[in-house]
Image (cartoon, rainbow, N blue to C red):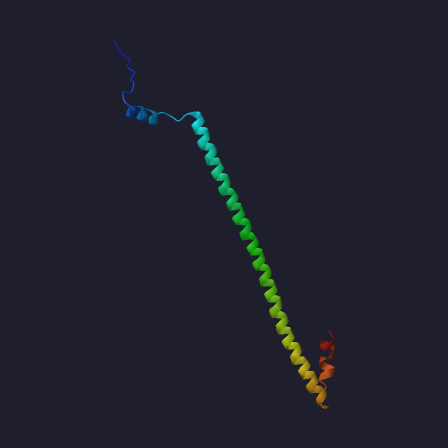
Length: 109
């Protein structure tokens, strides 16, 4: 004869152990999953915002580099223009040089 024994916990510690071994209630599982979902969504929002800030900084840096490069080129061209103007002034002072005729078209542009 087989006898089925159902063990009724005799003290509260045994009841807690039995409850810990049993699977979680569906409502508790649902609540835990919803909490995890909310946390993951928050992480996603932060990651998206971080990426957008990173992309914006890259774009601003690229614009700054373009402006700096253009500024450097302009400064170099102004230096060349200054030298041409000085050469033209020196050539005008000397009647022997035909430099104004040579660089006149360059200065006109």
